[in-house]
Length: 153
Image (cartoon, rainbow, N blue to C red; front, side, top):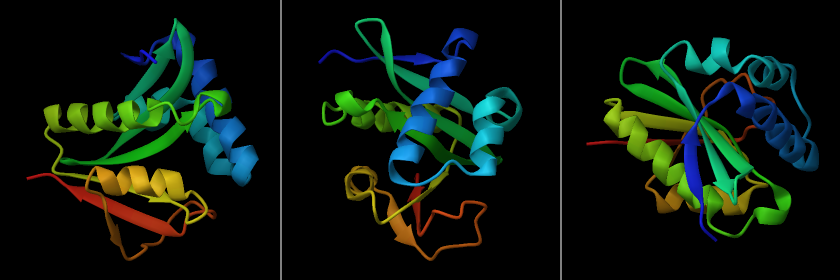
């Protein structure tokens, strides 16, 4: 399956929201903070030096991931989602790979993420790229019980 990765465009904003809401409703619930971020990605991700990537297959948006800038050299990998019927085709892998690559280009020294033990495939993907399980700090997400960091040398 040929996957094309593209940066945020205003016409992709509805996909950022719908893809994330779909997986959150499938596994958990959409929290207030999710509604805020998904409804206004400019304010919460793009305006502070972050970026959002989209995966396209045959010109159809099938996945996304955001990299929120959390410090001068740190990002949070967040809001990653792949359309349910397209999972297992390497789309999430491409999104994570490209997000890390672009984070490095933006001088990232660390990338953090919050996840959940109920998402073993996602955790395996993050581990594959070198993310390390770290003690859980206080978080705004009720569903999170996993915190991981990738240190970039």
